[in-house]
Image (cartoon, rainbow, N blue to C red; front, side, top):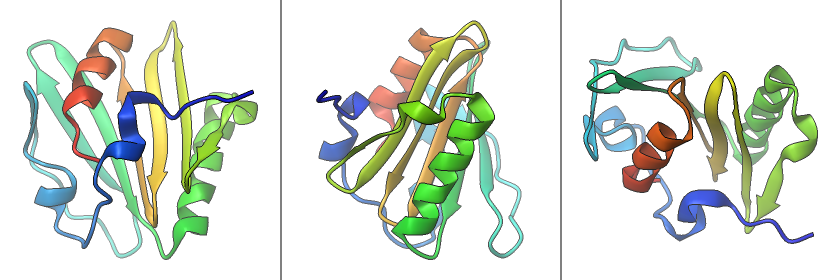
Length: 134
């Protein structure tokens, strides 16, 4: 079975560094990010993006290496109950699901882990991911 990584993620640039305004831009398409609370060392970074009533909750993990980033996808898969749906291709690991609770995606780019959750569902997530840089 050949399953592709969604949203053209493999064709996007690989993130670099630790500048949160680059990794989690203040504006993604029509979504605007609330100020980010500085995380503790080694802690995940959370960002809330809004477009009117639509909201996207994003998590960023700047991990020690790609293996640690993959572990974060595995954790997300366990928490969502779909551990058997992780897709891997070209060094990217990805989990994507849409259900009655909303739409969710988690993916890796090297040592970086990202996840995005749209309580409003696939349409909101699709719009956000079309504009997200990584």
